[in-house]
Image (cartoon, rainbow, N blue to C red; front, side):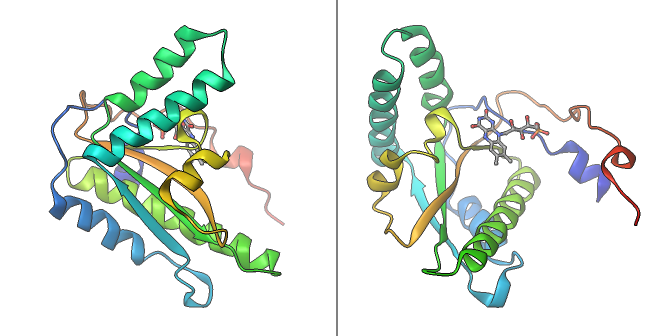
Length: 184
Ligand SMILES: Cc1cc2nc3c(=O)[nH]c(=O)nc-3n(C[C@H](O)[C@H](O)[C@H](O)COP(=O)(O)O)c2cc1C
């Protein structure tokens, strides 16, 4: 298990070939087995491929051009990260009106679901990166409205998925757990 966890990496460069429907279904099924408080199963998945993915790229381009009007190179390099991605899955978490604790627990559950998807992706030969910033558009309103999410949903992750353009399996250096642990 530790070996599998160490080999999981954020993959940002993909081959152009499409991801098979059967593999997408496997990722989604893996997600649904994540732990979640009171079985609220607070996740929802929006699949972007083909035409819808192209439309998302237009939304992202407009957002970047508005945000960085004087930095065309930044816009270009940010766009390159999603134009080479054959599949994007946007994952939302349910907001529980008037219950901040339950809403937070829902995002924790959705984060667990995303991790399951990440590990499943690697298991079936795919690569993935969980994006929130920049073109990830998780913290902005544009993607929320583009996918047609309701106000009872909040975005948690924009998952860029595809066949890895190169094999990256060496772990990034981590701080030893001993430095992150307090034994009480
Ligand atoms: C909540 C979250 C948000 C992230 N957002 C981004 C992002 O916006 N852009 C990006 O390139 N990577 C993003 N990442 C991926 C991290 O940069 C990556 O996981 C980290 O550098 C560790 O590398 P590794 O996953 O290869 O071990 C995000 C990861 C998480 C968990």
